[in-house]
Amino acid sequence: MTTALFTHTDCLDHLTPQGHPEQVARLSHVLAALEGRDLMRAEAPLASEDDLRLCHPQSHIDRVRAAVPDEGVVQLDADTWMSPGSLDAALRGVGGALAAVDAVLGGQAGNAFVATRPPGHHAETERTMGFCLFGTVAIAARHAMERHGLSRVAVVDFDVHHGNGTQDLLWSEARSLFVSSHQSPLWPGTGTPDETGAHGNVLNLPLAPRSDGAVFRAAYEAQVFPAIEAFAPELILISAGFDAHHADPLAELNLTEADFEWVTGRLCDLAQAHCGGRVVSCLEGGYDLQALAASAAAHVDVLIARG
Image (cartoon, rainbow, N blue to C red; front, side, top):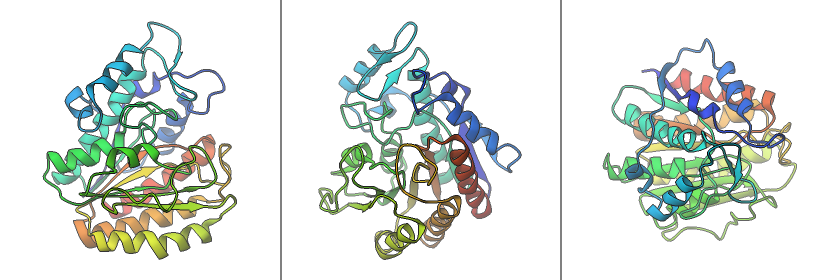
């Protein structure tokens, strides 16, 4: 089996104001770092409104579509902006995640990485938030459940910010296990351990500022891996944010590329034990360009080795 890479040049057309951390160069740096890798490269298709309605009501979709400007950029909330190309960029992200799930569950790829932007894990059911328009990974989880018939899908989010959107979208979804490790205190201020989902299907691991790889690994060993083991997933989805890196300007955790490599390997081990190695990873945050590129490459190298 091979590792699939889903991306699209449309994702370079999502523009943000000068100085905004979620910039075009994030994706171009990641793609440059992955050049020469042995990957099955594919274009991310556009998601349909039927795809988006797996998680979002039509009213949210209509609001986002209506906000697309003819030129320039417009602000949707405190952190989220749209340009003329933003909607198609976000639709490529969702479409790429769904196509990656199809490829992995259909046996065309052993695992997959979806390199798109904007990210998705902060978008709530009826709210854009934190650079995100649609809940990419949550939609992918629902796609696996509703269209492929899976009954146990695990979503692991190691972005430094709590995956509040994914949690909101999967809160009442008994077929999912959502795990988020994140710095606390830090925006968006959610993700406390007592937020456990409607069916005990949410696990939050707040990490104190300046926590390093040893703390991160101990938390995963003590809580995350046993929870996944008990859940016995049929597919593992990863919200792969690399802003817990010590060089990232938006947070204060002290992880390294080696820590991302380690957690990716351990999640691949669990996937191999329970679901034939089926892992789909989607790019989320990471705002130091060099750290992001190096961390994403380390992450994908593990997927390639295990694919």
